[in-house]
Image (cartoon, rainbow, N blue to C red):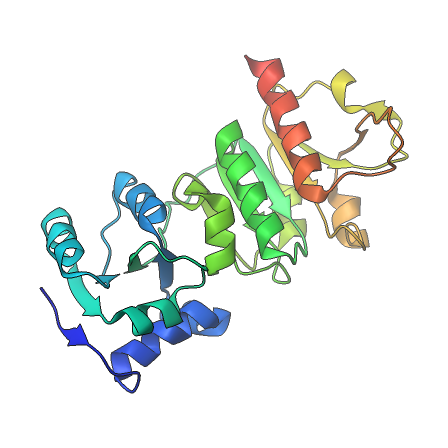
Length: 253
């Protein structure tokens, strides 16, 4: 087992705290911090190997060292552990990991997200995308950090079932996509449930307030309307994404 850390001044501890708090730090170091057993289990199931496993109980440290023999297991005092963890009731385990790097390959079912700024929404969208069988998710440079603790919690392990590309040129991705590129619009003439969604397909979603940028809107090949017979004029973007993706699932079953 690795070292025991009891001081907030420990340089390694300060580095882990920065990973929890700073998107810039995560990107600069190419690392992410997984909080909780569920996320760590999903990472391990995907074939990932954590760099460090951080725990606050000695029996847990021994158990995780047995499960992750290639990782360094570090024991933190409870106050230090709780100060890093972004959740109100920490489960007692975190892991420092390198986000997966996926091989370049053609996408058949993709999602393009522009300026989705709420990490909770982003996590929910990634979770729906993974559940619907999406293979690639492309994020513009103004999206929330895909590997922030809040986005990871919302994704519930989806990050390890998707090819996630951050800071992407969405206009270029849309123009190069070998299939239908769809966006939703309240005034679209075509109904989502009338469209043929069975071939290669990319759905594009933008910021709830501003919508899609003009350049990305111009790169879309079809605009679809989600029927809403009730008394609301729009859906939350995460809900709209789920409706669209699972209509595709329905059509391809």
